[in-house]
Amino acid sequence: MEPVISLDLDMVVAASDLDKLSKATEKIFTIKKFQHRLNLKSPKSDFRIQLQTDPRYQGFVKRAEIRNVMGYKMKVAALVDVLQGKIWAYSDEQRRKSKRQKDLADIFRLVEAYPQLHQLLPESIKSME
View 1: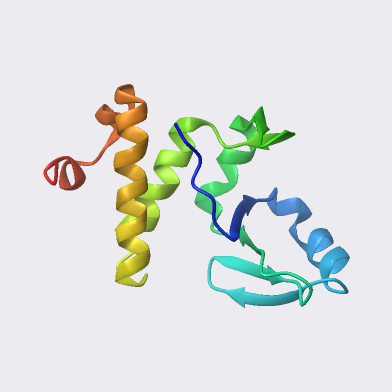
View 2: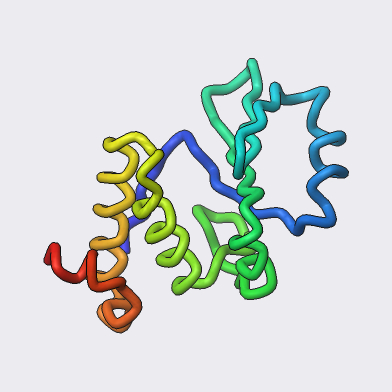
C-alpha cells in the first residue's frame, strides 16, 4: 500500500510517560491541549505532532511493531489498530466532515490493500461499499 504523506504525525504514548514527554518538549514546541489529544507544533516547521490521550489507544502501544518507515525503524501501530483508530475517528460526529471523509477514505484504502480487515468493519461502514 502506498503511503499517504501529510504534515501530521499521530502518536500514542504510554500514559505513564505523557507528563514526562510534555515537560521535555515544552521548550521546543507550542502545546495545545484538547479533550483527547495534545498537539505539538514547532515555530520552525509546518510539521504537526498529535499525541492521542484517549485511553482507548493505550493498547496500541503494547501491540506496536518495529517497521521501516521511509528509511527509519520505528514502532508502528499494528494494522488492526490502525483500522480501529480510523473507525473511531470516522465515527466521531464532532469531527469536521472533511476529516471524517478522509478517515473513511483511509478505511477503504486499508480494506482494499488488506481484504482480511473487511470482517472488522462495523455494518454501518460495510453498507457504504
